Image 1 (spheres, helix red, strand yellow):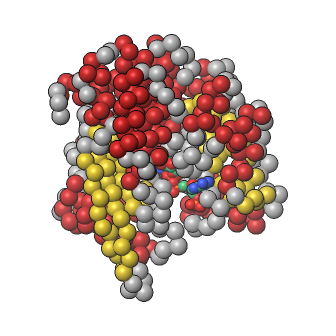
Image 2 (cartoon, helix red, strand yellow):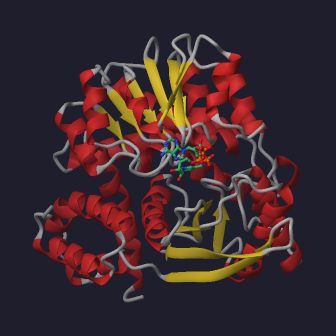
Image 3 (cartoon, protein in one colour):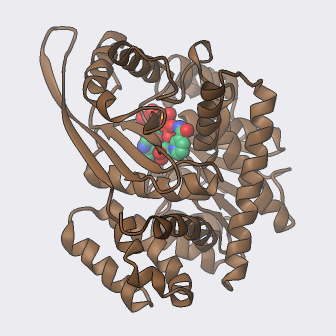
Length: 448
Ligand code: NDP
């Protein structure tokens, strides 16, 4: 789809020509550039200075071999990545994803999104992302440990508390962060805040585990209230059952909603009485089992094969918290037809562009991921602050700061949208609010 500003349109075409196979990256860049037309119209120096040409090219791409041995002594070789996208406003920051689907396009799209998300938190952090096509599912703890140690044997050269601070993402939870940080500490002889998402026993922040899911609901709550709505009494569907989904379910319930469905990559459960969260946490967080086992403990619930069907369940609020492009146009149509009035994205870019366009056309309140799921990285930045100060804040202190950050973030996106004549369009508002600050920093540096 053409972008109405000729410079931005030409830039988009050049990006596609240069790396034609990077579809996810094109999708993420197209969404941002499309929102920026009014800003570039008002500030032509943004085109002539080359700031946007620089912004869409990573500062550095690190790609490496990760050899590891399984429990039978067989050697496997995976591919590792760290894309240090932009450090205009602070050290690179962004998670690591371990999943078989990981490739350069996916890490690039995530790193690009991270630049804007991190800026929106109001904290001084640049954007990066990394990961590997390694699949932790079905591996023993010892295999995961050997993989993480091998991954860090290369990565440690490029990271540090003032340089680049990785964290978790899909497939990288508390266990993986422990192995990664342990190896970093061994290799560098430094106990520093070079990784976030650490356990509270060794420098982690309280409330980091809950931060993305809670932050999503704080953001959504602001958006709902501004429209005279709320979670109270609403039926909610949450896709996924990982870190983001579990804590989104917890906070949505605390705010008065009833979560009736959750999923994993194989299927979904529908529990009309409301999801039994302690049971779900036990199965997915503690025991790492499949979601289908939920119904053996709750016979009143139903299990359906295939994760995409979850969007057919009638709900008022949808929280996609699994993965990119999981909510397509037919799913969006089903949500709208069933009376859904709000969608807030917990995963990164879970709605396809066609789905987003439909929500906007139909007046469905829509909270885009780069704003709505920024709570995780915000608390990661708070973890960096605590590590630097050698201080440790209580759960309530961190949670209160998270709530304040998400509320401020909502207002800055909403106000930017309003200022540029697109009231209620939080996609444009989030892109414009963050871009202006990053561009000003880049302009101040001159050609870098
Ligand atoms: P986890 O690995 O903890 O969980 C991912 C969940 O999604 C799992 O339940 C997985 O199922 C499920 N899943 C994967 N693919 C699908 C699919 N196609 N349909 C339905 N379910 C699926 O990851 P996180 O919760 O950490 O991350 C989820 C999303 O949130 C990602 O997009 C991530 O980038 C984003 N995010 C995460 C942050 C964080 O702090 N963790 C911060 C900001 C964004 P299975 O168990 O079968 O694999």
